[in-house]
Amino acid sequence: MSNERERREIRKLFKLLFLTSRGGITRVRIITALLSSPMNANQLSRALNLDYKTVIHHLEVLTENSLVVKEGEGYGALYRPSSFLKLHFDIYQEIVGNFKPVKKA
Image 1 (cartoon, rainbow, N blue to C red):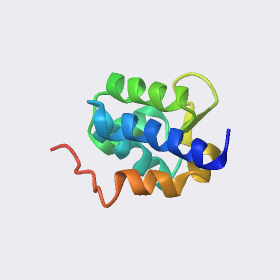
Image 2 (cartoon, rainbow, N blue to C red):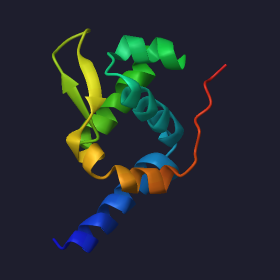
Image 3 (cartoon, one colour):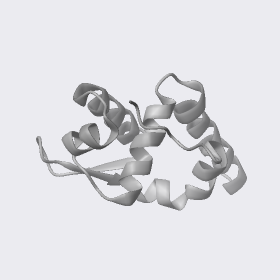
Image 4 (spheres, one colour):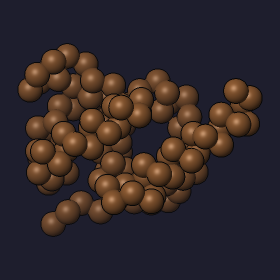
């Protein structure tokens, strides 16, 4: 796959995950939190004021799409941004732009 074609495909994936799907805002909030520090699902749930099962669902989506890496097993497993996300962070920033997620009240 050519570099430009690959970048187009990644751009398309990021648009789907963060802009056009229902959970896009939540996924941006999760990525933003993980960029600060690796966290487990419970820590993310508390930090973002989201239901634990909602966080787990979005972490699974992000993991399946190679944007987040899970370290460890079970309740205490930590999540962090993947090397794939870091490599293509310019595209991520382009897609989410100046989007500033608002914490749920």
